[in-house]
Length: 95
Image 1 (cartoon, one colour):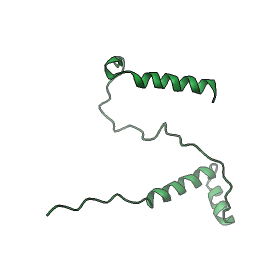
Image 2 (cartoon, rainbow, N blue to C red):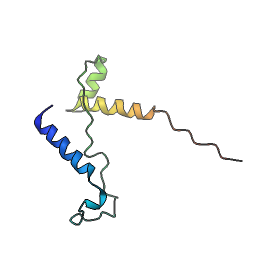
Image 3 (tube, rainbow, N blue to C red):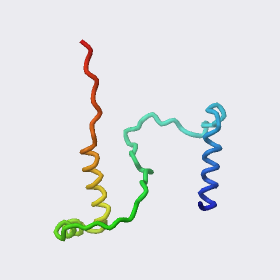
Image 4 (cartoon, rainbow, N blue to C red):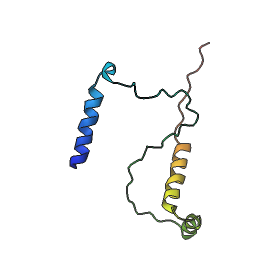
């Protein structure tokens, strides 16, 4: 593990160990309106290089939309994954 990463992990662990009362938030403005918040802005999942075989016409279609066809492939696969994820069951109402 790189030295810089180990240092960051130590700093985060030190901060996480602080009790709430010891954390000074006086210089942080309270945010009351979350309407303009961006979800997932800093979330960057780990990427893994893979080899995949696609039909020529599918690849041509992906590339025809400009740069970033691999990102589009990932987006389409993620959307399909989320659409097909099992939905949590709601509890039946008590009679």
